[in-house]
Length: 260
Ligand code: COA
Image (cartoon, rainbow, N blue to C red):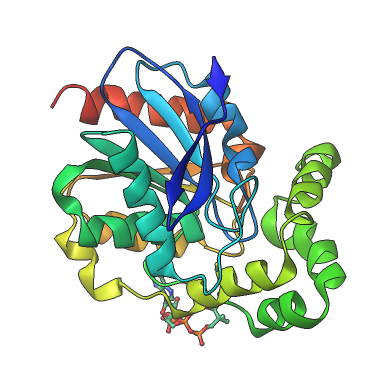
């Protein structure tokens, strides 16, 4: 059963979706730039594992309250507050794109209770094309119109692309712009070798925004890592190929997390 509760962070409300299990373990799903928890719908609803499945709406995204001065730090601390509020022990952080940057930064700061990472369509450095920064600031409609080409495999169903764009269009343009600025400034290339928890790396073979090269960098530098390249998928792999992503997560949890 999924419900939609909230916790407070800096005196404001942060919402999350949760699908409870009896197990103490939890996967926290963190969305990317201009997104909200909707991107993890197929994981929260259909992932068949005995883990609490939680998807956060980051500050100023989805149902969560609006915050001034968004930053990577604020996003990391919001996730930290979720972990504290739910008294979670031993979390797996699963982040998409910007969400992957948040997961990495969280791990580097608070590695104590992270037992695994799922890095989905992301990188250790996330430089952003100037045209994306420009359009999110001055031509938001053009940015939205370009999403099907930039964020999806060309043959992904129109219906999937359309509903994604509909959700992104609900996020304030200046928030989307700030998200991409945060990505553009993100660079933990030199720290990746210190990751010492099991790590699942997911990427679509047709990802233009965070290409397979970024995923291979993770694979090469993270000792206990598994790389899964998903065919016929772009940057929005968890929406484009939900069953394949869920199977990969399920076998990662079974083989690398639950057994330890
Ligand atoms: N992992 C491994 N290698 C990476 C990396 C990552 N996360 N990010 C960059 N690199 C590599 C690049 O491949 C490049 O290697 P090369 O010199 O051997 O070709 C080098 O580091 C420098 O790349 P970068 O820092 O990205 O600078 P750039 O000036 O070459 O390119 C962009 C800048 C914006 C054109 C480029 O980063 C890009 O095309 N980005 C993808 C599109 C985008 O906007 N993505 C949004 C992400 S949220």
